[in-house]
Length: 187
Image (tube, rainbow, N blue to C red; front, side, top):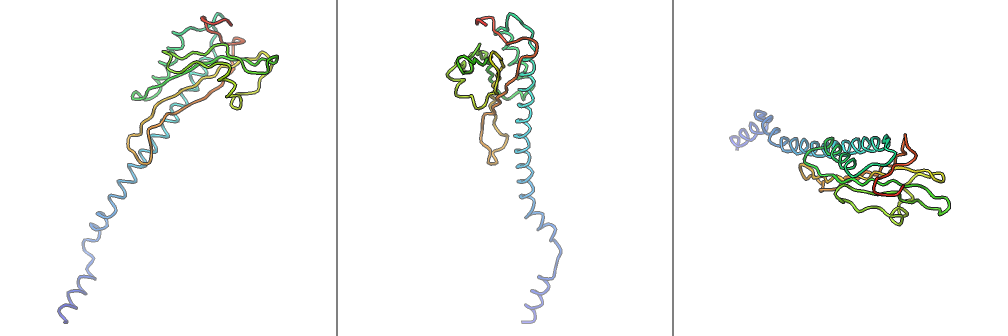
């Protein structure tokens, strides 16, 4: 009996190899945590990049000085600029809508709504009426430019993150012209 007691006591008091056991137990948890942090950091970085790129495009549109109006090539250039600013593996869609407030009709009215390659359907007065809670209050005849951006995002690792579409909804007032026009639409 003393032999078994001695072996068991020696076994329970022996601390050699505990670092190895600790490492084997904790390494998978550390790797799991690192990969999870990377996945969530990547998603927040992507959201931030899309947001900054969208505000840049909106600012470019607001600075347009085209009195006769912009054209489809200009809008395609805006989408190309947006795609240059975001990750290369992402696809984006934009829709630019110029609209005004009509006091006599008590509604927002679309001046024009375009999306390069018709990637998004054009907004109508009826569609715009469903967005009134998201649009700023304006005076009669005032106009604004609504930029909508959609970017498909697939996380690098699925850690509770599903593939999603990052959406931006930005309203900007034209700076140098009274309203942003398009050459194909009466302004």
